[in-house]
Length: 279
Image (cartoon, rainbow, N blue to C red; front, top):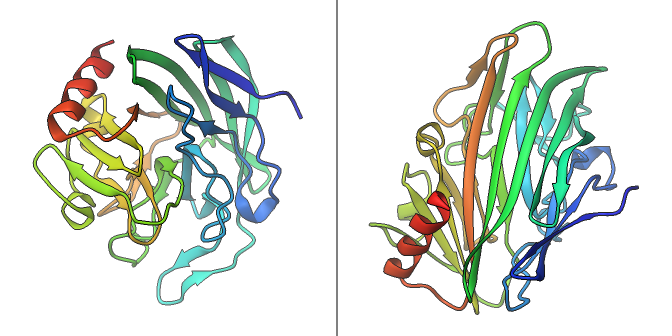
């Protein structure tokens, strides 16, 4: 396995990009970022937590691509519920187009059923904001390489309400108490989960993460938010209905995450998001 790529900001290491999880086929092996930390050194990602051992820091994962699982764990099957299936795909790192301490551009193949379904171009940058905050700017483009139409689904589109996860996903560390959740005009997990909002924030004991959709298309995706069950935030490529992708077509998304020491209030979060998205 290749050595992880280390991202630096303000001269400090703030994230590692690991090319392969090495966790077994049932966890949909894929590249991911972990640990990600604040400028003060507080780790704000989790890898292989006991509650969901297929959660791998921050990255891109989809539970249903044409019936194949690129998320890990069980697959939600309509009228059956979570089911163990031999349907897991693998994200294979193909190479770096660019790589330095400030970020990288990587090429990946999403492989399942003995063929390449998707080609991905993933761009990640560490952006300085101020003395206590930086931003992880992650964009990905998924191009249908299968030769036929593919569709993206989620447990929600397969019959489980409120579980429209799939796309960008960040697993935060579990602490003694659930993190606070808020948005620009909403407070609490119930109010923020499933909302189409410019940004949402997750605040732990001594850190705050603010997730922002940085393109119009990304802002149309509802946010998937968990706090009480476990701490995590992601996007929802497929919420009410499956997302169809014609042969050769590309789906693109960009999420910018503010990583801050301490607890931000709503005004502070909004100000850093504006700075991060336009940096």
